[in-house]
Picture 1: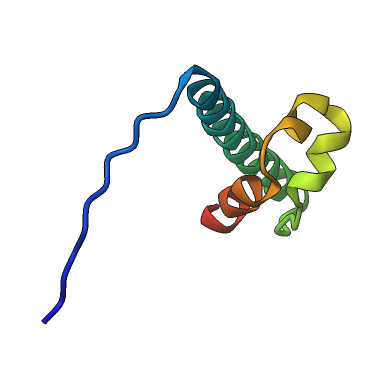
Picture 2: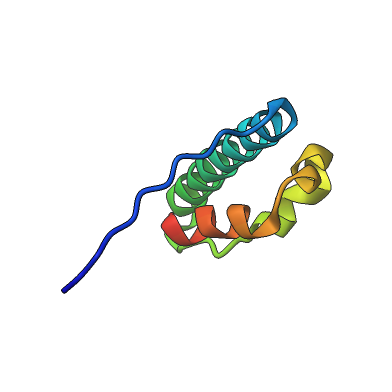
Amino acid sequence: MLRAYKYRIYPNMEQKSYFAKCFGCVRFIYNRMLSDKIEHYKTTGKMLYNTPAKYKKEFQWLREVDSLALSNAQLNL
């Protein structure tokens, strides 16, 4: 028999702020990487292989969030 458990979390204000930063950064990195891949393909006809680390140099605020969240955005792309 399979069982499932549901949990509800009640984050405090600091955690809510961190979650909002994470979700915003993941959304930003996904959209930015997608647009760069599209532009690169239009100009060269080849696929671009990029990583979130490349964008951390340009956008310092991406360093504030978990790197695994950003790499999952890359995998989902």
